[in-house]
Image (cartoon, rainbow, N blue to C red):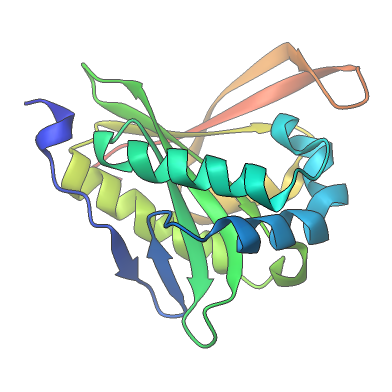
Length: 187
């Protein structure tokens, strides 16, 4: 079956979060979250080397909204149910349609770091990707030095499958290892 024909919800809730597809007007909240979190994001995220304009984030938000229903690159906004504050973003990216397999990536707004929001979101998103997109494999990749990201994968019952030695250059230009965590539907 073509993955475009599968139904993946536009929004769903966890205990503390409303997780939803990008919407027109989200550019401002993404701008504010990135601006607040830039020092932390710069260390791990290639795309976060500078804060762009609100307009640029709005353009990216609208592009993300347009591609959401293709189920290839889905950027989910994580909002606290209590006050609708944006706490982070989780991306679900198609790796291989014939498997099908996906990769989940995430970042958290600095002021909400360490409160379990990403773990809560990744657990819920993982279940939905298995149930609605019929994934046979979901991966999480992170720099071996990014202990917090690796901890999220482990708390969400992903197993370390590989360590790719000298796989990339880190933000300081040094060779760095990549960890690949994986979950299967039966886990």
